[in-house]
Length: 373
Image (cartoon, rainbow, N blue to C red; front, side, top):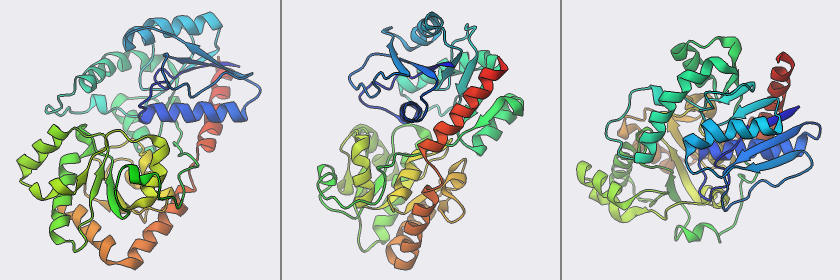
């Protein structure tokens, strides 16, 4: 087979969720499959994280805008090299393309009610682009991959997709997320171990405001009053949350170092007392697995895919109830037996997931679609 994989953004320095997923899939396929040829279509960038090999060929397409890159340059490049299948990995695909398509549709949040308070131009433009493109490509896709049973059922129900067209393939996590004892890396971000960690941002689904209200309630009740490490959050956005909710007690306890490199995350998880993953909506939740694999107790939401990924013994809270989040932080702090149970549960649960399993299922799907051509 000659398989094309769209991986437009993996060479950018500051990667995000979908970038990491396709990157790990490519690296695993490169290691395990020495029979088929892969053509990886990327936009040039500073982090060349995939190199050419005998069966993996990196093709850089230098086109300035996302839409032009995907709708014109990508299908042209795929035709030029003669791929048998084109796998588009980031929720959208070319509208006009006569190559058999596989689409990874991580979620359909773009079709759900929109939070009008979201002022991010980048997020709003992406939302509009997906709303315009996705309905026009679904019927052309040989398979639509998604990453949890929750999201699979959601897509089938809301988009009226035949079940035979869907494929559910869980994500994995990188093997370096494990218990480690190294004090050098986390000190770039925090002065001491035992802090709380939260990967919040301005996206409303991340539930940042309500989580910070919960943190304020925790500080009022805790004897320890652990500091909170937050990644990639704008100070003005934080000031607005503090002002609206009258929670000035959190201001001196929050550390915001900006973007945290993925290679540093294992050391941060290992140095944290607990990880807060209190989103309103996730299609999978890789950070949930990463923290559990490191033996860090996680407080997560009882909504969308998080109970499915976290498992029956995970700490599940109503993400819209700040008191529940604070209660669980206090319980972890005051109940050593409960804390140890959560460490052990998380590490055992994480063993069920891996990028190797993801890539094996993906290769099986490529073969299935190739045989149906």
